Image 1 (spheres, rainbow, N blue to C red):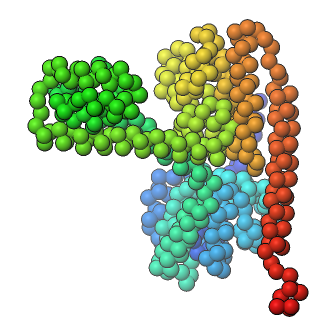
Image 2: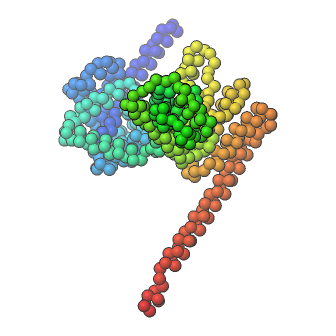
Length: 487
């Protein structure tokens, strides 16, 4: 008896739930370059059950038009209005035009409990549900419906042609891309990313070219490699010497300027007289000299790029630069994609940034996870003991996370926070070695905030003094009106 009652209860419950499903309505919002459009989808529960058939019928206009009907369409008044609305939608914000459009096109608020709005962007759906009090969805049959709307949009809206749609898409796409490039928040970070990538590539290329010059010039002067083992100095010496038989006592001074050591210069001249190398034709020596000159210029350009990167890091991320150096900080920014992305990372992610392969290998094999990634190149980890490397890398990642957030979100650029954070890492190293208890982070940050306030006040006073001096100089330069009348 109980089983029979339970079955009847389940039967009635399923019938009620099916009736509720069929009573619910699905609307789909489509944001086009021409304006906002709202479509009504008939029997979307049945469509969800036959999703493969929906995918096939999307390209057929007659079958698609039988299911999807246009409810309302609001065109954009101008290209400026279209750009403003698309910018707001891309950021997940409901613009005023879209809010008014949905308020008028959707059913009244009392009847919205049985309505569902389909959108493509989940962020926009969350914002719409908060503003209008309607359930939003971006899964199931909604993506296929939107794909069909995009395919047949010029046929679903009266008075709209395919040519007009393409022109509107092209114009809005150009203006949107231009605005994103012009107002890109991370445009300064892009220069740092490209600079550190170029610096790493130059290091590899200069090393490869220097080894090529060593191998090439060693046929003529093999003893030079042992006297001058450094690649850059060896390339300069090869460019200057050319033919070893032309070396004499007069060549000691220019070789000393290149090497910075008179003993090595004398050793080169002595080795050139007793060299076992083969003779090379003048044409081969000219090619070696030209190649060596190119490598020397490339090494000088590498120094310029390093200085440029240092200045760029000091202007974009001064606290991070003071804490771990310009190159390590630039590699962290490059790996994260931007300074904003790096600031959003937790300290645990920043700690192993650059060691992703080792991390996933450790998770797969269930072994120990890596303790550090790009932070390994910092001097602090090299100075720490073997037992304390993991601890200091975790502490350093925490301070780097704080420094990157200060650099990213602070309007006042100052290196005071970076100096304080660096001192904290130094104190932590001493604590691991000697046991001296360092200051608490709250106390250090209070001191830093006070110093920044003092520095800002001093800068304001200096700016006021400059303005007063400029005003006085202008008043002294302008002649008095009485003197002009007497003349």
